[in-house]
Length: 96
Image (cartoon, rainbow, N blue to C red; front, top):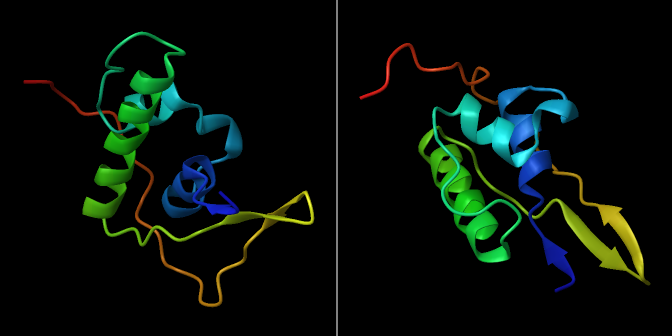
C-alpha cells in the first residue's frame, strides 16, 4: 500500500479534537461505543476501526487518503478543499 487513510488524523480533523484524544479506545468511548474483542488483536482492532469509520461516514465525514509513501518517506496528503467537520462527539447520556 502506498496510500491510505489514517483514521486517527481523519477523526481528529473531522471532530476537531487534539491528537491525544485519537487513541482507539478514546475514539470509541467518545462515540458511545465499547471496544469489541481483545485489545491489540489485529483483527479486533481492524473491526473497531471500521466501526469508527462507519460512524464518521454517518456523521457526514468524507474519508479521503491522508497519508502516502513517497521514496520511502511518510508524507501527509493535504486536501485541496477543506471539509467542515461535525461537533466533537459527546458521551451518551444513557445507554440502552
